[in-house]
Length: 71
View 1 (cartoon, helix red, strand yellow):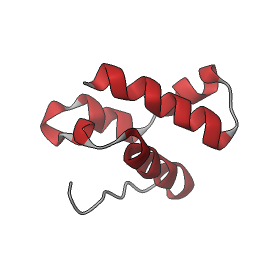
View 2: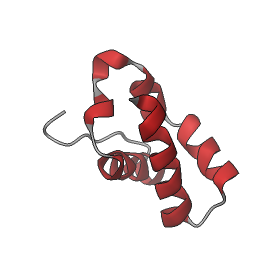
View 3: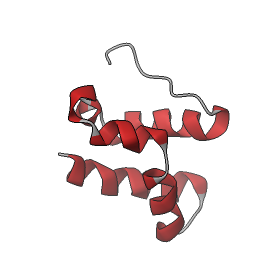
């Protein structure tokens, strides 16, 4: 499942942060959110790419990970 979500997340980063694919990929893979996505026990992969982008955006803006209530 992670393999289908990450490309969508990268695309959202590209569009919303006006960066190229290489920079968007770096942003995603270096995030704490990505570390948690890799851990299957967190089950974050069940969230939509847009919900994950919102979490990532908050992380990038504030340095904090804030999750929706359903997590």
